[in-house]
Length: 148
Image 1 (cartoon, rainbow, N blue to C red):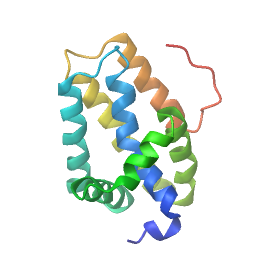
Image 2 (spheres, rainbow, N blue to C red; image 1 turned 60 degrees about the vertical axis):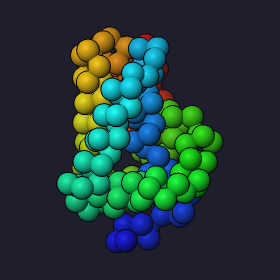
Image 3 (tube, rainbow, N blue to C red; image 1 turned 90 degrees about the vertical axis):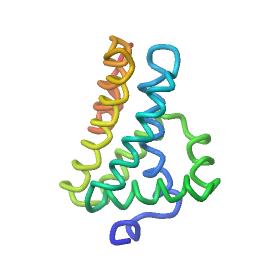
Image 4 (cartoon, rainbow, N blue to C red; image 1 turned 60 degrees about the horizontal axis):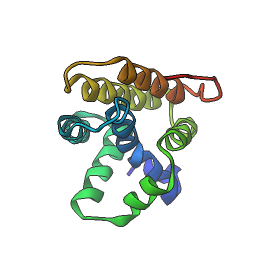
């Protein structure tokens, strides 16, 4: 609970929603969410909760806990915010923690995006564009024009 205290309840839920938004953006980039991609998103989320450290571990552990306990608060945040807007909020919120922790979290999300895209017959141009968009947003460059 070291990092959670730096955020409001809603902010913490937004951070927890980030793997869902990353998974959605990549899986939907080619027009349909392949079950393999959905499974990989879950696998990567559990992996991050298990093997990460610091802030990343704390966020992902809480994310998994919320799912296991059917907590509606996380679902409400996911459904309220558009994935792009949600990731923009995540990018801003990461400014509240040390840069090294923020970079580790962003790297985990980037790795998730890549692994999700890779699992379904390789990475197509739309998934590649989605991954680039996720990178831009996480790096705080969300006012730049980006085209699929």
